[in-house]
Length: 599
Image 1: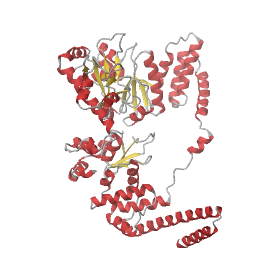
Image 2 (image 1 turned 135 degrees about the vertical axis):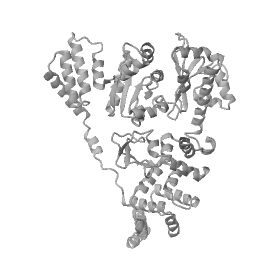
Image 3 (image 1 turned 60 degrees about the horizontal axis):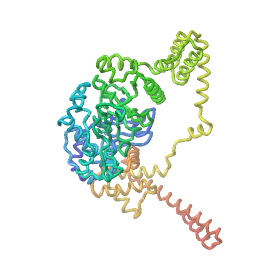
Image 4 (image 1 turned 90 degrees about the vertical axis):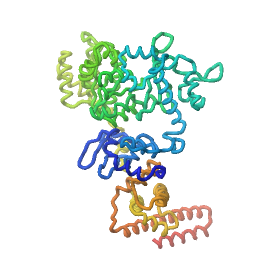
């Protein structure tokens, strides 16, 4: 795998890349002592157990076991091949990497998924060219410029125009060699009902590409110039193998560095809001793709920041969506604030009517705390002259406070409730305590759940320790592998994962004449095996007493193998007795005695 790129190029890229900088683009890192820590991007957690060691240029998660170097980190986080990760890092350092085409080096996801990405990239380039460079795109370009879209914004977001023809794009994609099956799977083409062939999904629309975290186009949203009742204002790509709305956050590839700098995410409802915010200089903006905030979205956001300002539309639907999103984020320990738009405005309306500076300073710059927004939400459409409205307002606010607020926040908001409603703080506090007790009771796990929660972590067996120690010596010294091959005709390891690593390491040393833990890691495709190698490499061994440790490990493995044989023969003996084969049962019993003596 690694031999396709010259070794000196790989080493040059490794030595010129700082793993802290690369990982820091995906994980919010904080320095503690010599290492950097953050929330693991490979599994959900609320307490940082993910560490990056700068001097060793490795990362390791003590929670899920993920680990490796800067190249394997990119491979895992972006689902890249070794060559593609090298190329990405080479671009950062100004080092050219000549890699094979995906068909030669192995696909990023699958070959079909890669084809879908290529189709979308081709379509985006064509739409963009039509908008900026043809007479057919002039009307759409004039429309965008009249709405405040500068050339810079258009080019940054790769905005385009789809011709109002039935099969212009479908024909172009077929000429590029894409099949009809791929055309349909991409969502760019729709099969004709009355005849053969396909027609374009997007016709006569301003095209807004939707890109993944690496900046590759995976879908589109198309807007008509003139909105009529006969057709939808926006048309979006259908979900596909490369585009699932519940997992995609718009603008990650552009916003990542700004989020790191601000340590904060501005979350919008849609991509047009992000573009409008960009006009106002709000660069740390993300948006969902027309869906409620999902657990997958939240996991992605945790990789970048722990502070979120929600800025949804000012209509009733926007308020409801903002409340749901705020509660979900608050429950995942984000610091949540909500920027409220006046009337029924959306961000684009506000920017056009009040200017970019006002949006940035008055709206984004002055958000409301989570509970303060919740109180504003609860007051909407209520008349305190009616007792039901008054009691419902108090109930809604206290339910949010229960279990989600500090004592200071509780006292502050209870005092505010008392002022607003005219009820005494004592009465409101008494009701709050009842709700809090109910919340505690409701969230208390069932006895069986408690039992599971207290279950001891998986024990590291003596077999695992012996195999890990033996592999650790083999990783550090090729001569150890030579001894293992000579001394044991069979694979000396017992566990399947260590046996697999033994075979991989044999092949590695046939190609390379010296130990190189980083290089070996990069040859492994299986992330679970990479985790095991990291655990092994980080385990302690004594180089000065290597022979004694290796001998002890081999003795332990031999003993375990004999014990396995004993247990198997005991079981076989019992089966022979059940079948009244006493001669065979006696023979097996004698073999068991002999094996026990050998121990």
